[in-house]
Length: 354
Image 1 (cartoon, rainbow, N blue to C red):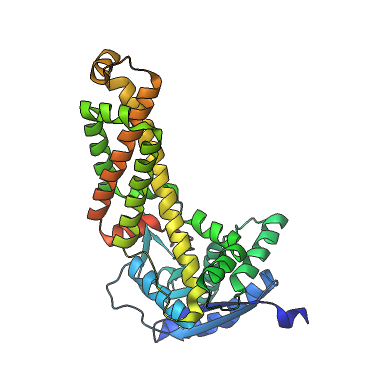
Image 2 (image 1 turned 180 degrees about the horizontal axis):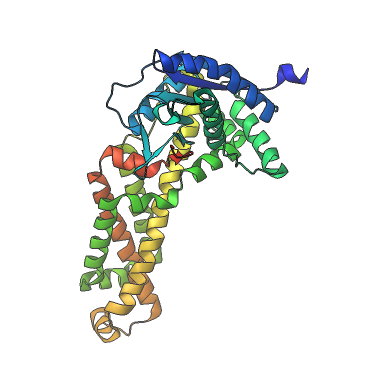
């Protein structure tokens, strides 16, 4: 009875016609059996489909995007693409990679070799699905209990409703752990480091602001409420530039995929916001250190027209940091869409190719 009412997790295997499709057909049954044995809290439906997805040559990002589109079209929960394209992570060939926020994994057939092809494909596919779900290889009882809850959240589809706010609240509260896992998998704190142009523009703007006497006086006369507004505005400017400029926002093509798209958009926005806030915090520390080292007190006092105190240095660092963040928004506008997507989404690699 409990088996009949257990929620269903749907996994799609997407493979090009020919040998990849033949392997996917065999893999669907074996993978479903292995997943059901490892995670009996839900019912598993693994389906293999033929789809070339992209025309070669194509990179990982294009294949992930095409697989994501097929996932949304089929209303799957997860998808694994069997590709003939060799995959590399940090210039090292790998058998597969996974993007938890997309719910998509890539399995590179050339890296599997000719011996034990099916066995290696099955083991790699299991590892990729575990990565998408956030299950560690050495999971203990608590990890498995948490994974059971997450699987039920992934599988459960709340009743559709015309009220957007009510639907959104229901999806977010019912999938909180899943959402947190998606954001954590993206490693948002690494976002700024990967966007070299945005980081360079932010540092350049910060240095210019720090040595400008007019900025000193502006920071001194702004007050904490106005500095707060400027700070929020600078963060929002970078977030909007990244999300809108790189087209990171998905639009649901049908009511069936509203939950998938909503979770993706929230996870993407949260990733970018946390990444930008991390950048802001780092810039604030750098600005404060720079102010204390470069803006000597006699000169600062002369520029302000009154004795300089620690609060004056903090206000200068705060405004400098906000202006530097705005400079980062300008730099982010110069980043390519592929660079922003690569920075926003972490593609976790599986075992290296032998």
